[in-house]
Image 1 (cartoon, rainbow, N blue to C red):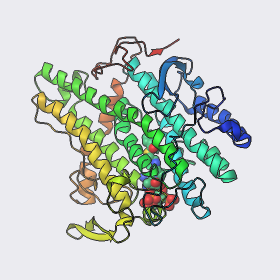
Image 2: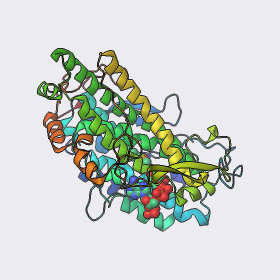
Image 3: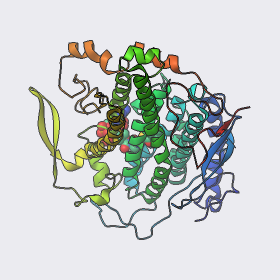
Image 4: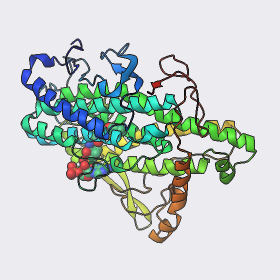
Amino acid sequence: MSLNYQDRIPNNVDLGSNRTLQRALEHWQPSFLNWWQELGPKDFQVADVYLRTATSVDAKGWATYGFVRMPEYRWGIFLADRNPERKIGFGDSYGQEVWQQIPGEYRATLRRLIVTQGDTEPASVEQQRMLGHTAPSLYDLRNLFQVNVEEGRHLWAMVYLLHAYFGRDGREEAEELLERHSGDADKPRILGTFNEPIRDWLSFFMFTYFTDRDGKFQLKSLAESSFDPLARTCSFMLTEEAHHMFVGDTGISRVIKRTLEVMKELGNDDPQAIRAAGAIDLPTVQRYLNFWFSSSLDLFGSESSSNAASYFANGLKGRPDEARYEDHVAADQMYTLEVPGDAGTKTEQIPMRAAMNDVTRGAYVRDCEMGVTRWNRLIEKAGHSFRLALPSTRFRRNIGVWAGVPTDPAGQPITQQEFNARIAGWLPSEGDQAYILSLMHGVHEQGKMAAWIAPPDRGINSNPVDYEYVKLH
Ligand code: BYC
């Protein structure tokens, strides 16, 4: 299906042939734009931003780059091309035809999954709303806005599914996606991490590295769904998601690179001296990492989950890269789970289907490790013995079998008293947060970069690093 850019809502789903759906979405569009003005990036709505816009779902050339004012961004609806041969890839109906419509018995569950996915997208835009003011460069400012507009498009992707396949319930859910707000006392966002404030750019980079990566794994799981329109929507979202994780990965690398330069100039690794020189000491980077990684682990849900088991059995949500597994039915397999026990930990056997959240979390943790290895290589090359590390999956959990169980970052169970006494050394303390906030001054001059972060290796779309990525008026 070719892409229609003349429509008010660009799409490759032949929206024009379904007037009722088109009207319903055109009715939702002003609410979305109001939300964007009220809770999207604060104060940069008239700036011209060098943005990528999706124009096709072709892997070779799916986007164009150009200057756009954010409220005029063409938020569209794009599904990956349909594969008429596609069959259900897992669960009890393995090998049967995928669904183009939703079987009645799965309606409520699929709606809940789509709403939960959809809820995270505007939530992240709300969390990042104030960051434009403190961007370390125009390059970073542009990346922030690129991430924001694409999260907006991902919201559109879920809203399309709600409107197209869930009738009135879906339309109501679409309205509510704009009514819940990150951190709101009465109507918060659904998942914990999306109610955490993001006040500084170190947190933003951690969020785009760790939390957007949860997005990658959840989207991969939903891209396996038997509900074909959901699978196709999520496949295309993954294309955009890669850049968001790149922003996090390179952002953290650049912070570390700058810190290492300062350490070299000073000839020592004393955190106070590094701070006095205006850079971010590595133990502080570790504490921010501990916070966002542990929070993001909760987004996978409980290790042992009857929800996950029924999603899998019914073919609603699979494992990321399901094709890599040998047994796609997983009816008789067992999974060994580590749970709290008298001697600290013990193991339990649970049905594999109930363990799918933990399987996905395991794949996520391995993916997270790759960045840490790269960052440590930078530190090692600079001749320092400090190493960053992912904390244990048991550390500071609020969801699942380890929820509320005090452990140290290595995952060793400790008393609540010891946990309380030592937590300030493991997570960003008030002092750390005040220091990081003190570094946050917007650098909005072309070619300039804040002193706490190194410039990137290259610019966007073959442009130089010091290109005027955002034209402020
Ligand atoms: N916070 O059996 P359980 C992204 C709830 S990120 C609060 O343990 P289940 C993005 C759970 O909802 C990807 N509540 O887990 C990133 C359930 O409540 P209900 C977002 C939580 O259901 C950056 C109850 O606990 N996509 O795209 O197997 C920027 C028991 O559930 C949390 C998705 O999440 C939590 N952390 O799995 C922008 C995919 N964890 O339903 C975007 C869709 C669990 O009983 N969602 N609960 O009221 C899902 O697949 C599942 O809902 C979950 C939970 C994986 C989240």
